[in-house]
Length: 405
Image (cartoon, rainbow, N blue to C red; front, side, top):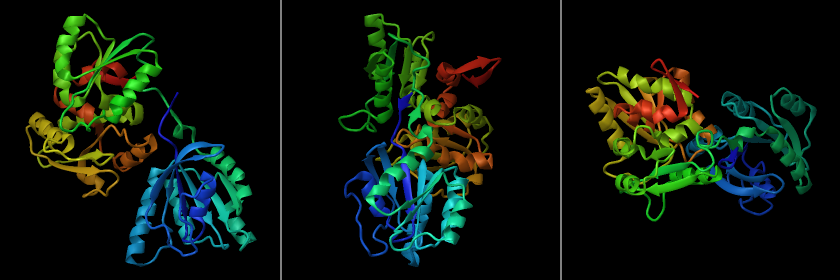
C-alpha cells in the first residue's frame, strides 16, 4: 500500500470556542491566530502540519458557524462546504450549549459519511453538565474528549487515531498490480503550452515514483520521439502510459501487442469510481441535441486558448456525436451553474490534486441523481475510437462487455 495525500481534518465550532488554540496545541507550535475576539478566523484555511505522535495531516481551520450578517452567512456557507473536503471532523462544543447549530453540523457529517470527534473546550470556564452530556451521548460520534489544557492533547490524538479511516492514509499502488519486477514502462509526456514551466505535471511524477517503487524501469519521452526510440533501441515496453491529449499519436506509435493507457485513466482506476466510469462512458452515445454536459476540474490552473476541458473535449465529443451540446466547466469545488439533474453526463478529471474522499464527494450528487459519470481520459479514448485498448490494462473484456479486474 502506498501513502497518498495527507488526511484532511476539519475543525468546526462556534466563534471563540478555541479552534485556533486547538490547532496550535496539535501542531505544538503557533500556526493559527488566537484571539478573544469572536470571528478571528474568517474563511476556511488549509494548514499542512505534523501532529506529534500521529503524523502529517492537513488541517482545515473554519470560520465559526454561528457567524452573523450577510458576510457571516457567506462564511458559514464556506464552512459547510468544507465538510465535504475532510476525512475526519472535530466538532468543538462549549458553554454547555448544544442546539440546532451543533445538530446541523453533525447531520452534515453523517450525510457525507464523515467520522467525527466531539471536543468540549474551555471546561475551566464551564464544565459539561448532565444535559449536554446526554445530548452528546445521543450522537454517533467516535469519541468525546473534555479538552482544556495541553495535557489533554494526547487523549485527543488517540481519539483522532481511533476515528480516522484507514483509507485516509493508504491506497493501492497506481500500477503495482499490472507491472512486475524489471518491467519497462514507457511514459509519453508531451511538453506543450499547458505544461508547467520547468517541471512535470503531478500524474507524471506520481507514475514515475510508483514505477520505481515497484522495482520496474521507467522511460520518459515526448510523443514525437516514440517512433525513433522504439526503432533505434528495439526495446519492447511492457506498458505504455500516455497523456490523453496525444492518444491517437500514441495508439499509432505503440505496437498493438503492447498495453496502452493514459495518465488520466490510470488515476480514474486509482482514485475514482472506476466501475461507474466504465458504465457511464458509453452513455456518450446517448447524447442528444441540446443535452448539457458537465466537466469537473478538481483544481484551478491557467486556461489556454486550446484548453482540454473548455476546448478539446467539447470539440471531440461534438465531432463524435454530430450534435450540438451545452458544455459547462466547473473548477475546484465551485457551485454548479445548473442543478445536477440538468446534465446528461458528468466528466471528471483525474483528480490528482485532491484526495479520493474529496473526489467521491464531488461526484456523489451525480451518482445520487442517476446521472452517468466518466473521466477525461476515458471520454477522449471513447470518442477517438480506442476505448477498449485504453482501458484493457485494467479490465477484462467478456463478450464485448468491460468488467473491472
